[in-house]
Image (cartoon, rainbow, N blue to C red; front, side, top):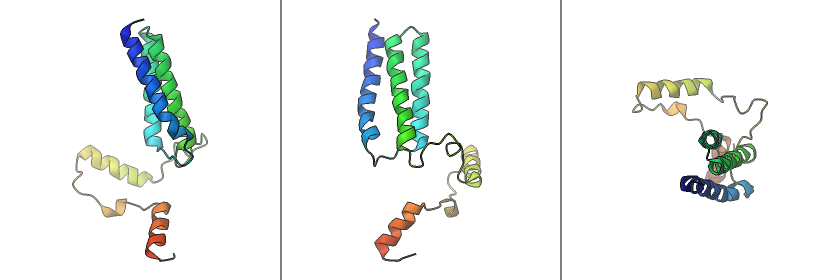
Length: 133
């Protein structure tokens, strides 16, 4: 066994240990924007390590990718549903506006109307300021 294979395997094992509390915590909410890319990276690294003959590293990375997949399914705020929630955009217009601003590099002009408070924000503000909407 190459020492690099062992080091990568240990690193993946540690990431699984560090992610386990997130999976067990019923109140944990991890956005799909975090968990899905991390899952994809774990799977891509796993396949890459396998192609290099580093089977221990591959197993570790695939296990870490699987852990992220479980987190995406169980701990995402909106729930990951194959029937459409995963790929649905809440506001295509807002997404297009943000993408255009990012591509043109004009981050200095922020339109305050682009920010829409979530239901949780509204409920929090109502409970702290005493108003009842």
